[in-house]
Image 1 (cartoon, one colour):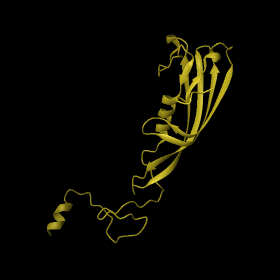
Image 2 (cartoon, helix red, strand yellow; image 1 turned 180 degrees about the vertical axis):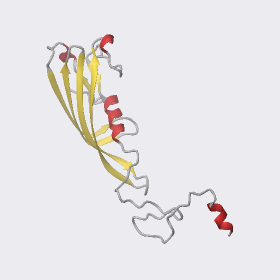
Image 3 (tube, helix red, strand yellow; image 1 turned 120 degrees about the vertical axis):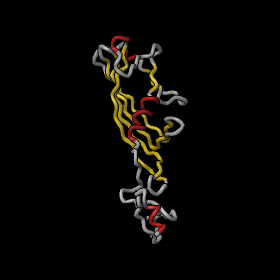
Length: 168
């Protein structure tokens, strides 16, 4: 059903010829899903439900998978589960196009990789932490404070006059 080189490109042309209200489910499972050069999801599962409407194909999707991120405090890599949902309309005519401008392709195949990538990137935390109480690195020597305490004062002085204290 799917092309191994383009696993997210699905043939949905048959749904166009069905009656309004027809629905079809596409379950996808891959041990390793590549969604671009910088995003891969392991243990990837996805369910895409496509409903035939008067204006076009209403696509609802839900996915989950694990990716590797880097902690912003201690700089160690860790595994993070991403889970997301989306709803998009692939319109039959330019008149019915939504704000994203998605049109039903003439060949009846839709590649969902760009949509999945976009919504997966939205699920990546801006401030990725390996654990909520991560202590990070020492600001003086770079020691990982989760492993051991180096004894340095960890309070950073953000004052522009802090340099003058060294002169006293």
